[in-house]
Image (cartoon, rainbow, N blue to C red; front, side, top):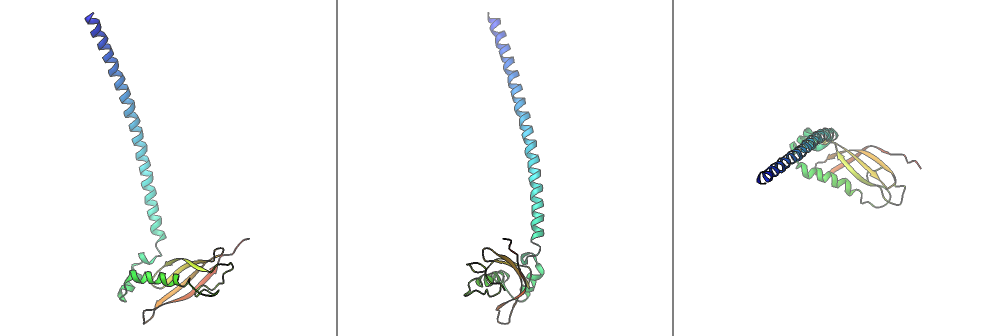
Length: 168
């Protein structure tokens, strides 16, 4: 009787070990597959990040923040570049606060009830600015030049402009 109990315990133990081995192997195989999938996903995402960084670098090429020659020009003139860039932006945005129908720099008149305002500004270098404007329904862009006079006042000069046609 004792021998049968030991035999049953041995068989039960062997079956339990086989079950544990098979179950653990399946779990490990699943984890390996998951790890391979995650590694492939990480590689894809890293490639996408690299492509986006390259694209971002290209898109920011014409930007004063990346133009060392333009920044050096201002530094050699004795200006604090960060304050100057902020003053250029604020100077253009302050033009949005005007009386009447004529914007101080945009050569168009609003065709809606709202005023024309400058929305977005990109300072290209130490002389050029591109900006877009809208009245809420119509959009356009302007190309400006700017300079700093002897009294450190910013002077903006409109060079080119256009308004996108509306299709109603």
